[in-house]
Amino acid sequence: MELPGIIQKIRHRIEDDHHWLTRQKLAVFGGTLVVIGISMGAFESGQSPPDKSAYTAIVELTLPDRLPLHAADPGSEDTRRLEPSPGEVDDWAVNQWDAVVVRSGQTLDTIFRKQGFSASLLHKILALNKDTRGLTKIRPGEPFEFRKDPNGNLLQMRYPMDEARFLLVRNENGVLSAETQHRQIIAEINETEGVINSSLFLAAKKAGLSDAMIMKLANIFGWDIDFVLDIRQGDRFMLVYEKLYREGEFLRDGNILAATFINQGERFQAVYF
Figure 1: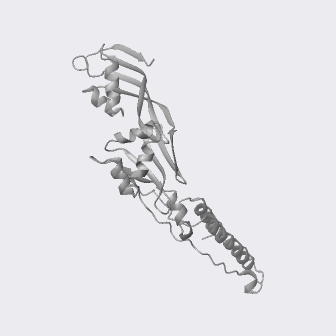
Figure 2: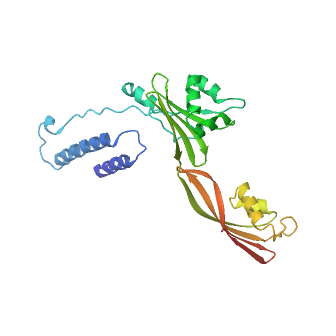
């Protein structure tokens, strides 16, 4: 293979973020090949090569171990997690959140005991303010998250009060405090449309609408259109609606901002106000 082709392949490998070698080591390897190539070109041009030690260099490349893959989702191959080095174990452990999902019949007292926390600590937390007192009414499926120090003592506890707020409890040198943290929710405007062939439900599903959004659409025009008796093949609908994202992840559909429904040639329109 020609030298320019080799160098080009090296550049491609340097630009590949997913290759397991680091960019720096590939760059050193490429530079070594360039030096050797220049020397070989001089030799092929008819010039007498100098002593072999003058143009040959041995470069030792220490290749890193492959990073371990830990798939949070069994169907995902892209999830990676770096394990801590021995000197970083304590810091790494302190910064991890342990997630617990409330099971049926479980109380916060039970959860605290399983985490190794005392009943007196729970009572002090419940007495902080009205938000922490509300923790006595937890429901199955709700998540709690805990951070501990290397000795297993509570550092922080986090509980989602609703879609947009966290209740955060801190334990700093034995002093407990609680505060409400707001979570960022962003509304993205989305558009869709569909043509009815058999039913509104099937057409709306094909257009990418959730069950809740289909019910909203039907409720908007429910006073004007009987969706059981009046719907005909070829009827159409068009929607402008919100998709809500929380901290970069899709949360749910939001409001319908504008909608048009054409039923048997008659146009019905609605605007959110």
